Image 1 (tube, rainbow, N blue to C red):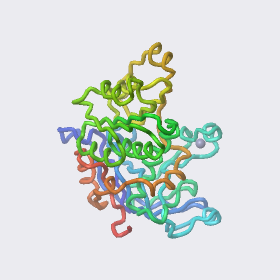
Image 2: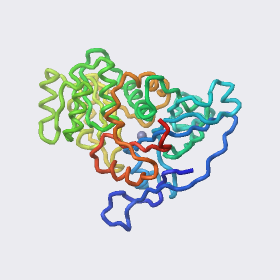
Image 3: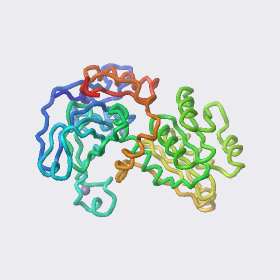
Image 4: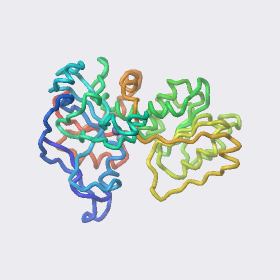
Amino acid sequence: MKQVSAVKIGNMQNPDPEKRGKVEVLDVPVKNVGDDEVKIKVAYCSICGSDPHLVDGIFGWAPPFGLGHELSGVIVEVGETAAAHGWKVGDRVGGNFRNYCGKCYYCANGMEQFCENATEDPGMAEYVVWNERQPVKVPDGVSLKNACLIEPVSIAVRVMDKANIKTGQNAAVSGGGPIGLLCLQLASLNGAANLTMFEPNPARRELARKYGAKYVIDPTKEDVEKWADKITDGRGFDVCLEASGAPAAAETLLKISAKCARVVYVAQYPRDYNMPLNLQSQLFMKELEITGVFVSPYAFTRAARIIERLDLDDLTAVVFPIDRATEAFEAHLTGKHPKVLIHCNPGLE
Ligand SMILES: [Zn+2]
Ligand SMILES: [Zn+2]
């Protein structure tokens, strides 16, 4: 079967073609389906901001390795135990790309995101084989095209868990990429007031406005702290979500946070970057709660339920067939599209 794979490690935008990372479609064997597993014919798999980082070599994986974790598809084969638990051929699914063991210290203590034996079957492929625990059903009214976003939506669900928005609290999101825009939509559904998006890209600001932001501010042109004071009567935002990955934004959020605010970091940051934090004035005096989100355990069922209430069509508008995956990555890296999808089995809708 076809699988989109990293075949050479390196920055995909390196001007020197010798050093540039490379993605190609390889022919790899399809796995056999075990008793407690299902085989999914993949419809769509969207490119995540983290995928080019994998090609970059952040996790030190040796090429070639398969990519992709934001997928939707249809079950085409079901193991005996999985069938006994209700999975059927024809079920439309999205879900958790990580297969947790359920047995290690972390799995047994409510922290399966740190599972010591987690495995993954790359999603930008014609088929994946998943443990029966991984898929969640796609609601009837939701297309497979939009359902590949169940995984990024699950991240936003987990952010909401940690942000703990109380109805009417002031909330700000920095970074209007897919995760920031999904967090914005969920924050709006969760009753956030004076919802504010900080984002330099005008097209992304436009989407933020459409998705419920009351204020959209370009942090490269406007004084973010002044705006925050104006919007919140000088008290700061009760909930601050950082989804841009930019160190400058990471620091600014601390400054515009209110007393007892929750500040959630949901991006990847330069590995050698240390954020200044004043323990006296920022943490102690303000009783800030600062936290991060790495992956999204215990959030997939809820992501699948809430997905029909989200506006996703703008995020799933750009699609490339799997044979043009290299081009799809190039399109993703231009930064011009909110998201780029790969159609892994053209014809499967
Ligand atoms: Zn992702
Ligand atoms: Zn485990």
